[in-house]
Image 1 (cartoon, one colour):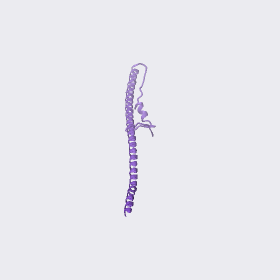
Image 2 (tube, rainbow, N blue to C red):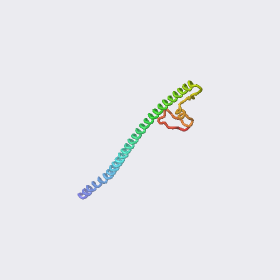
Image 3 (cartoon, helix red, strand yellow):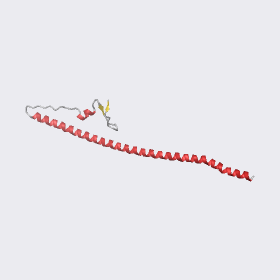
Image 4 (cartoon, helix red, strand yellow):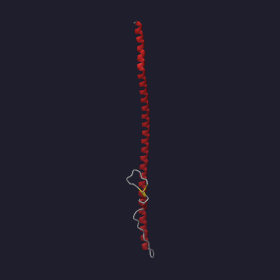
Length: 135
Protein backbone atom coordinates (compact mmCIF):
# COMPACT_ATOMS: atom_id res chain seq x y z
CA UNK A 1 0.00 0.00 0.00
CA UNK A 2 2.85 2.36 0.77
CA UNK A 3 4.32 1.57 -2.58
CA UNK A 4 1.07 2.30 -4.40
CA UNK A 5 0.83 5.64 -2.58
CA UNK A 6 4.37 6.55 -3.56
CA UNK A 7 3.72 5.58 -7.14
CA UNK A 8 0.51 7.57 -7.16
CA UNK A 9 2.26 10.64 -5.65
CA UNK A 10 5.06 10.43 -8.19
CA UNK A 11 2.50 10.31 -11.03
CA UNK A 12 0.65 13.39 -9.76
CA UNK A 13 3.50 15.87 -10.44
CA UNK A 14 3.89 14.42 -13.91
CA UNK A 15 0.16 14.85 -14.56
CA UNK A 16 0.31 18.41 -13.24
CA UNK A 17 3.32 19.15 -15.44
CA UNK A 18 1.55 17.64 -18.43
CA UNK A 19 -1.52 19.78 -17.67
CA UNK A 20 0.62 22.90 -17.20
CA UNK A 21 2.62 22.33 -20.39
CA UNK A 22 -0.26 23.03 -22.82
CA UNK A 23 -1.29 26.03 -20.70
CA UNK A 24 2.28 27.37 -20.86
CA UNK A 25 2.38 26.82 -24.62
CA UNK A 26 -0.93 28.63 -24.99
CA UNK A 27 0.30 31.52 -22.82
CA UNK A 28 3.49 31.76 -24.89
CA UNK A 29 1.47 31.75 -28.11
CA UNK A 30 -0.82 34.48 -26.76
CA UNK A 31 2.16 36.59 -25.67
CA UNK A 32 3.74 36.15 -29.09
CA UNK A 33 0.49 37.16 -30.81
CA UNK A 34 0.18 40.18 -28.49
CA UNK A 35 3.73 41.24 -29.27
CA UNK A 36 3.09 40.86 -33.00
CA UNK A 37 -0.11 42.92 -32.79
CA UNK A 38 1.68 45.63 -30.81
CA UNK A 39 4.40 45.78 -33.48
CA UNK A 40 1.77 46.04 -36.22
CA UNK A 41 -0.07 48.77 -34.31
CA UNK A 42 3.16 50.72 -33.86
CA UNK A 43 3.96 50.32 -37.57
CA UNK A 44 0.46 51.50 -38.56
CA UNK A 45 0.72 54.46 -36.19
CA UNK A 46 4.06 55.46 -37.75
CA UNK A 47 2.64 55.15 -41.29
CA UNK A 48 -0.46 57.15 -40.35
CA UNK A 49 1.72 59.87 -38.86
CA UNK A 50 3.85 59.98 -42.01
CA UNK A 51 0.73 60.14 -44.18
CA UNK A 52 -0.67 62.99 -42.08
CA UNK A 53 2.60 64.93 -42.42
CA UNK A 54 2.51 64.40 -46.17
CA UNK A 55 -1.09 65.60 -46.40
CA UNK A 56 -0.25 68.71 -44.36
CA UNK A 57 2.65 69.44 -46.72
CA UNK A 58 0.39 68.96 -49.74
CA UNK A 59 -2.31 71.25 -48.35
CA UNK A 60 0.34 73.85 -47.55
CA UNK A 61 1.65 73.64 -51.12
CA UNK A 62 -1.91 73.90 -52.43
CA UNK A 63 -2.48 77.03 -50.36
CA UNK A 64 0.74 78.54 -51.69
CA UNK A 65 -0.26 77.71 -55.27
CA UNK A 66 -3.69 79.30 -54.76
CA UNK A 67 -2.11 82.45 -53.35
CA UNK A 68 0.32 82.62 -56.26
CA UNK A 69 -2.56 82.13 -58.71
CA UNK A 70 -4.56 84.89 -57.04
CA UNK A 71 -1.55 87.24 -57.14
CA UNK A 72 -0.98 86.46 -60.83
CA UNK A 73 -4.66 87.06 -61.63
CA UNK A 74 -4.64 90.42 -59.83
CA UNK A 75 -1.44 91.39 -61.66
CA UNK A 76 -2.98 90.39 -65.00
CA UNK A 77 -6.14 92.38 -64.27
CA UNK A 78 -4.04 95.45 -63.41
CA UNK A 79 -1.99 95.07 -66.58
CA UNK A 80 -5.16 94.62 -68.61
CA UNK A 81 -6.54 97.83 -67.07
CA UNK A 82 -3.27 99.65 -67.89
CA UNK A 83 -3.46 98.42 -71.49
CA UNK A 84 -7.03 99.69 -71.82
CA UNK A 85 -6.01 103.08 -70.40
CA UNK A 86 -3.02 103.31 -72.78
CA UNK A 87 -5.19 102.41 -75.77
CA UNK A 88 -7.64 105.08 -74.70
CA UNK A 89 -4.86 107.68 -74.43
CA UNK A 90 -3.50 106.67 -77.84
CA UNK A 91 -6.98 107.01 -79.32
CA UNK A 92 -7.33 110.48 -77.73
CA UNK A 93 -3.93 111.60 -79.02
CA UNK A 94 -4.64 110.23 -82.50
CA UNK A 95 -8.03 111.97 -82.52
CA UNK A 96 -6.37 115.31 -81.72
CA UNK A 97 -3.50 114.86 -84.19
CA UNK A 98 -4.41 116.08 -87.70
CA UNK A 99 -4.63 113.56 -90.51
CA UNK A 100 -4.30 110.45 -88.33
CA UNK A 101 -6.96 108.10 -87.16
CA UNK A 102 -6.83 105.20 -84.75
CA UNK A 103 -9.65 103.06 -83.45
CA UNK A 104 -8.89 101.02 -80.34
CA UNK A 105 -10.26 97.51 -80.64
CA UNK A 106 -12.77 96.58 -77.97
CA UNK A 107 -12.15 93.32 -76.20
CA UNK A 108 -15.00 91.72 -74.32
CA UNK A 109 -12.76 89.79 -71.94
CA UNK A 110 -9.14 89.99 -70.80
CA UNK A 111 -6.70 87.73 -72.63
CA UNK A 112 -6.09 85.40 -69.69
CA UNK A 113 -9.83 84.75 -69.35
CA UNK A 114 -9.99 83.75 -73.01
CA UNK A 115 -7.43 81.03 -72.33
CA UNK A 116 -9.05 79.84 -69.13
CA UNK A 117 -12.46 79.57 -70.77
CA UNK A 118 -11.27 78.20 -74.10
CA UNK A 119 -12.88 75.20 -75.75
CA UNK A 120 -9.98 72.88 -74.89
CA UNK A 121 -9.73 73.48 -71.15
CA UNK A 122 -12.16 74.10 -68.32
CA UNK A 123 -11.20 75.16 -64.79
CA UNK A 124 -13.40 74.38 -61.86
CA UNK A 125 -13.26 77.44 -59.56
CA UNK A 126 -14.74 75.49 -56.65
CA UNK A 127 -12.30 72.60 -57.02
CA UNK A 128 -9.72 71.82 -54.37
CA UNK A 129 -7.00 71.66 -56.98
CA UNK A 130 -6.69 73.64 -60.17
CA UNK A 131 -5.83 71.48 -63.09
CA UNK A 132 -6.81 71.57 -66.70
CA UNK A 133 -9.51 69.07 -67.55
CA UNK A 134 -9.92 68.20 -71.20
CA UNK A 135 -13.51 68.38 -72.41
